[in-house]
Amino acid sequence: MINDTILIVDDEQRMRKLIKDFLAAKGFSIIEAEDGEKALEIFEKQKSKINLIILDVMMPKLDGWSVLRQIRQESKVPIIMLTARGEEQDELFGFELGVDEYISKPFSPKILVARVEAILKRTSQVSNEVKEYAGIEIDKEGRTVKVDGKAIELSLREYELLVYLIENENIALSRDKILNNVWNYDYYGDSRTIDSHIKKIRHKLGKKGKYIKTMRGVGYKFEVK
Image (cartoon, rainbow, N blue to C red; front, side, top):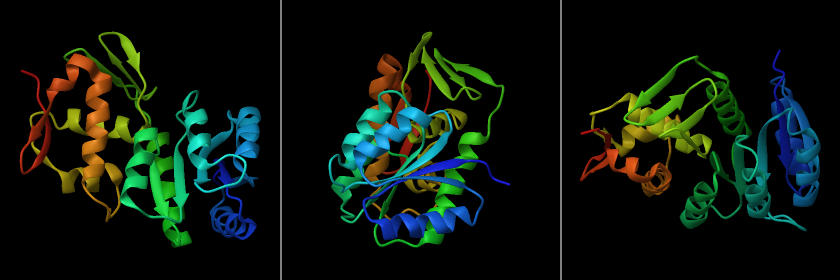
């Protein structure tokens, strides 16, 4: 029996019920919030038990972007954003703020459930390994990254992308291969999503960011020389 708890934040009661019914059928515990302010209030009180958040963008009182920013100041909890817009720029903006998945309305509830399960499966898989690569330390159990002993903040997707690059050191990885292995589903958006993530990771790695090489016409490679 699944014990994971999911916070659903959407001002449309019908949408909350639809998502709740599909997730509850899979054994998830559900908490609901009808606006951004309520979502933050609930998260502050119950953040220790919330394993994932499904967050609508357009809401009264406080929109999804504002909620996302505040939660990311203190938590790496996986967040799936829901939007009716479906525009590429909105998607890139969401990833810049630390979104883990981005789903445009209308969507298939079964696909949403599959993505929820995939994210929770990845975040629950831990290893006692702590590996160091030229000053970049990866702690898989704690899902943390340190650069020269100093911890850096990465979103779930940034962390998974960095680990994938490092574990395939010296191998040129195409954007399609990165999408298939890191995003873990058929992604139909622009591959510039990867470029946006790489840019942020390089910035956070500081001088170590140079180890992520751009392979023109191909993709990226992690290489230490």
